[in-house]
Image (spheres, rainbow, N blue to C red):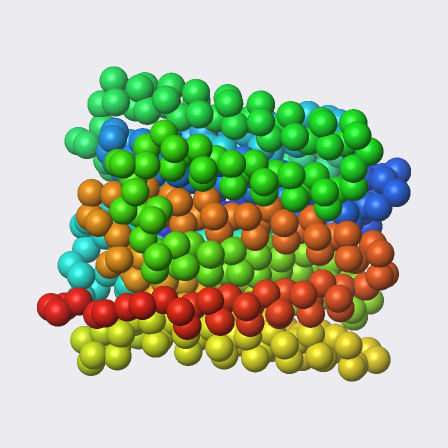
Length: 459
């Protein structure tokens, strides 16, 4: 099960992370819908943010439906949905159509996280819970690394069959096909827990939520752009939409899901995830552009260097999970471990921002080392936080808790690419955006200190 879920994380993370390198390639080569954009980084960041607007809006419904139809069912639906939508992206032309399909992809992928975390919690002994979450979510790092490092190669592969300006399409076709294959494999392995009726009902129910969410996301986009608002304000309106969804869920199902919304410490963890998701998708979306701009390097060299940031999770995720479980058995508690990792990451992120500001000619090797070490601790803290959420949430509502956590946290993912892109276009460099990321990590650390936590009596 761990291996299957790891593969699911790998392909779904590659599908969502690939937009950043492809957008960077389009900007650098003046092709696609970014060729004539006045503020290409701001527009590209908004495209990435709108994907996460869709991803964000099915976090809670996906977890809620998993509690109802079965977590394995929603995992299979999510993977097949994401694979087909990613392949479809490669056939799309035009800005609005591209945005619509990426939002649809995000809506499908949004159902994966809460059900994956809930299934692991239910199937893994408590003493190994954080390790399991760390091992499985290593697929996130693998997927982001694949999308970051291999996008140049897949674009070159695309040149064999397509005109040069259309070669980016091959990236989506290859990654989408890989996701469909993994989805079919996971469905076959989970076949004893699946039924045609259950999968159909879950798909239709998720489709209903997604249709409404797509209309809301695109409605906000069209109203905002029609009113002449900047990319930044459109992204802020999408976040306001998410806040409205939280309030709507509380009003409609307040009695049923109150224990995971009104719990003070769970809510603080949800807010901490805004900083976590901001940092994750700031670097995952723009790291290639950051490195290329700072070192004046080629697209390929920048992608390989940026890969250090994503690749650190291959070690950080399982190591953080193992250390969390080990520390719990020793009586240290998960909160202290998460605070330690977050504090070290904050210091290293500040150091990276300072280096970009101070160095006249930043070194690829130094940037790669700083990205790797900061990401190592950043990735290590995440399975610790997931296990902490599982311990604080009632067992019957874990899917809803993880869904709400990622719904609120993804506000950072929606804003990060867009705001960072605006800062890049307005300042001419990435330094201000990196300093902002560092400041948000520090704020997240401060909020985490306020979480009250008592380790389980038996582990």
